[in-house]
Length: 467
Image (cartoon, rainbow, N blue to C red; front, side, top):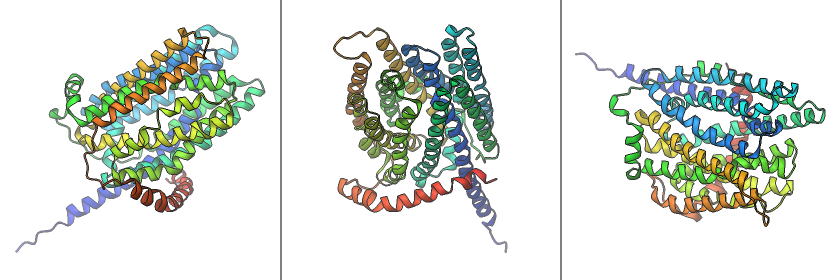
């Protein structure tokens, strides 16, 4: 009699589980250096644009360029998953994204040398558009890839942990870069300071590329039936939960970016803040959001991503109004910055997980590219409207930029009030009670969460130096 054995399937299952665990660690490691690129590079592109005398309208258009060209790139790249491994797509995109920091360094050199100075803002916008195209090619492949290595039952907590570590790194590096840049500005070497920061961004992205090379990629089987065209998606969108969510996020992106790209202009030009104060305002909200982001992750895992979005969304319209109430650096640091950070941290975490809940793994690459296309279109139109308003709005009773922030706030409020009710939770969650949620998540969970987060932050050194 031949005995049946399940040893090999069990071994294979354990092996895949181990590979996924290792891949999740590699993802956090890769993200640390990707955060370095963002902190040294992307964070300072708008200040760099201001430093080379780019107009307010063109700075607002930088946001619209990112919103349009990035998602257009993703629509093309989502089809690449059918032909090439997701890992290969990401590796090519990340490598050339790193190389594309060289043109920004060259723009700083040309400006400091007084060469074609009037054309440099146009060059900046051109290479920013190219950077957005290259960087976003990896988007659908990475989103599909990461979704396959993070299991559903702890997805909220894992992404919260990842965001915590990367957020902490971002705060430290962004603040260090601001002190560095202010020092160089005071010495009359501002362009040299930007050159060094962009060079560091290049190096960090190459290091994240190295970590991608050693990250495990689960196999994925795609069928022709898994693909659907953009027009098919638009036709079905009002009838599906994910489609309605995409429309909601696209319209919210429009409302959000009417004023958001002008925030840097407001702080650096209108209020005259230093780079250190500007970055401090930016990162303080991030600090408070990462401190509590694990609570958002636990809240989302327990009560659902939809309820998390409801709780956080109604703070979002308040933020642009808060920007306008005081020009005090301390006020800007401790009021609008913190409220914005707390709200967007929970909302963005829940939004990302909401996509995973509503889209099957085989369709995630295509679905997320269409999602990003519509959100990007909303961003393009919103930032474009902001650019038109700041260029042509002329009021004597209120500063135009303040009026734009108020318009932005009202638009956000309408979108959230009328958009949120059309969405629904698709997975089983606990019944939500404000009192019990507060008791279980906030009161009981805060102490243990802070201890966990302190341990996770202390583990950053381990992630950086682990081979």
